[in-house]
Image: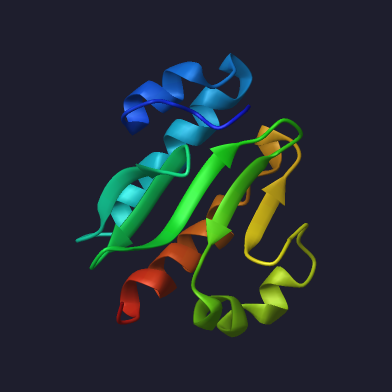
Length: 118
């Protein structure tokens, strides 16, 4: 999916291919549960979660995969061993198939993000 022009996350989810919509809605719910006190916004054409004016988490439906952006280097370092076997770029976890999204790992990353100061 090219960068979304949606004004909010609900609009974003309506643009996502049907085969990914359910998984992304579940990911959104997980973010809302774990990132208490964070703002949900659209940033760079994707849903993002931040506090104090700084985005710390985002996700997107890309052409070949679902991406989960973890902008916190300290959290990435703390989870280095668990992230080692994942398809990961500099700050982006990639899941090639919706059914492969590791919600247990993502919940742990979200909890760690929320527990650290902004």
